Image 1: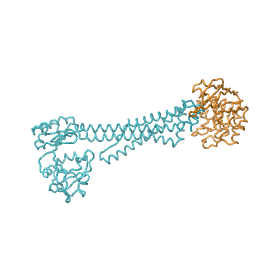
Image 2 (image 1 turned 30 degrees about the vertical axis):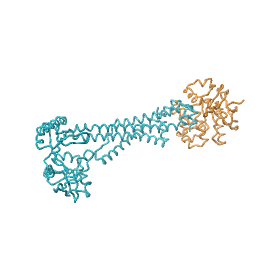
Image 3 (image 1 turned 90 degrees about the vertical axis):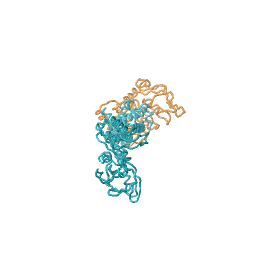
Image 4 (image 1 turned 180 degrees about the horizontal axis):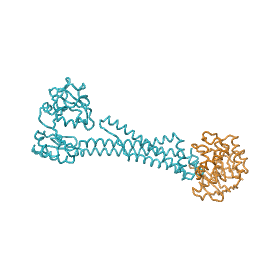
Length: 220
Length: 397
């Protein structure tokens, strides 16, 4: 289970202080599929980055399975990102020098998984997202939708309980977007917690629960 | 570890252009150090080598050298001086020479030129062997109206170039040119290029003098040179009843006089090395900083998918060391080639035999500089990027 307490984040944009997140309390149950929807600048990506341990809050706390992530060291946070969470970015963020298989295997490499296991599992994951025939292609040789599917396979690499998607369909066409959401829906059916941020109500409809955000606050 | 190597190699290979440029950036700096140092050592060696080849030689002059350039002549030696010297122990050879300016005519042109006369065997050892003849042959003791001329006498002094078998008039006596010297290098050009050489007999006659202006003595043992030089001065000073009539200079003391020059050469060497080192280091830092900084985004992605700062850092350090090492080795190879080319060009230009000396410690230092500076300058941006929050790093690029 993930929950946030009084979570706030303030950025400095030059001399101007921007309150991206204002005292957010949110609870996400295990196995839930939640969509956070809101216009750009509403703070939804900031919230996601904090839950995903990619960033640290200005005040307040994020608890993952009861662990206060604010009390963890750098390495402790890295471990959570590696073991418990799979992150999918809007820009895919694949390593462009590595092929699809190597990209998927990379989180396992950092987790210290042996070479053979890495390749076998990456192979399976790519097959699962329908890219069994594109394993040795570089990201530049793949379409946007294919790249995002590689990114999903990568997010699943260390078998995390939670998959987080920051506008995962933002850079693909509607049809591909639906296919990607279908994959996420399937992952949720397998028991994984899925958290997706979007500004598209149609995409949000895949989720079991939708939360709206505006001006750094979660609306009820 | 093996996997890390593979990953690092992968990343280097996939960024071919960038990696090659980085390697080149490093190699250029290291090549500069290696080539300049090697040529510098070669130059130093060439000059000392040339001097030590003449270490058994003592020059005896009737006068004294004041300061760096002025020589004050106090008279000339006599035949008695020369025969008295033969009593001194440890002397292998004595060669008496005379010289003076003479009026030389060639095809109706008159030019004053120094005429040198001496024992032909001795002169051969002193000048012909190191400098070499371009045309013709060297003088023989039984030659009479024959002369050998320096490079500038043949090519520069008269409107027309002088060749073997041409005739010169020296102080109204006709001489036939039997040989022409090569152009002398730094050490010899003063003594050879602008002079005309005759047998001692012919020189005495044409210069109308019995005066001996210069005696060259060779000793058996180099370590005895100083003692012999002192005795020579004593014997000749006694003959002339003066305290400081003769000056006998060993090559050792000439080398001492040239100490200043060596200090300058050493200083220049150190200076060159220091500049090359700074240039190389800045170049390496720049290329490495840039190549790691432009990958901040990649570092962010790696961290976002669970890499620890340490993982990222070790990966990038490994990459930096591989690139630096390849750059360092490439630089050494290029540096050695450049040194050889430079020393060849230098030898051709100066006439002095300069062979680049590649010292293994210079090569090792070059590689060490490449790796140390490369890794350190890769370390800084990699650490900076690995300490950013993943969100911040991912936003880059």
